[in-house]
Length: 436
Image (cartoon, rainbow, N blue to C red; front, side, top):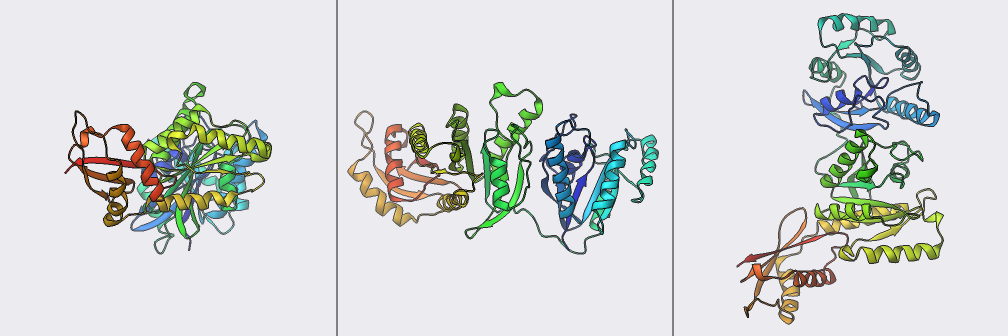
């Protein structure tokens, strides 16, 4: 039996707060502004040695003015209910029963045939609100489970009830040992559309309005002989364009995804090209030792000649990180889509390649002897041998007599020689010089 739990309800009843409490980290954005979770977000919980997956959903709200957004959020909720075998219907003791709660209860009766539904009365933080919680029994889903998600009160009992439905450990949706590929970029460049095409379903809301993905969304993926986690992040805006705190926290979440990821799949809009903000974020990924694949999306909106010139311009502007591969695609037309993943897998394999010490020295030492580093004040610098550190990033250590005298231009020259002889495409290389 699949062990999947969906948290559903109207906006601002504390779904994301409960989600974060159960998975024991801040994965979904929480705010006093209703509707801050628009997509469904996946997490994992282990309780009593039983593992299960949790889905946090957008708030069901018939009063949303934007019909398109409302339709898409409600569709996401329906998909979440279909995926889950246990549904937590979250309500707010402070507000009591609302018209939206009544409408949504009817939706659950219709869509949750054969599924276990628990009414979870949140914000039952004193005796008065605990008594108020009993009015939710009129929905016909049994006695409400009283909790206060903000401080964790009652969540232990809730977890006991959830896990009582599972007879064995669930399959983990996420493995911390799996590589993570983050899909990043500025808003409205096609990140969520790309993820939806790759996984074959509409996991994230796609809309022309910038910022319709606010949380980072994780998906388990298996392709080209490699299992990995795909992370779709909220669009990253320039600081000057952040008009609300939620956009700010989305940006932090996306930057956090960069820092946690092994590979960054960076999307550009072909009509906008490479902007300063893109360069900053690509450089951030490089500084965090991420492999990078640059993807130019929406090439269906420009001519082949314009695409060729754009790619040339991008290559020139990436001269300091010219090892980053560039792929031109059209997510809308589904052109070259799987080349992205194939290249990302290749870049990850390059990142995890370990070169033996004899091979490193046999190839690089003769090159260094032909063009040795220039010493300061007549000093003769001799590089004796080289090793690759057993780290998750490409780090080469050069043992020599005067490591502090190695100049930056020589390091750049040496890196070029390394890349000519070893396939580290897409990955930064860290060169370390130590005293022998």
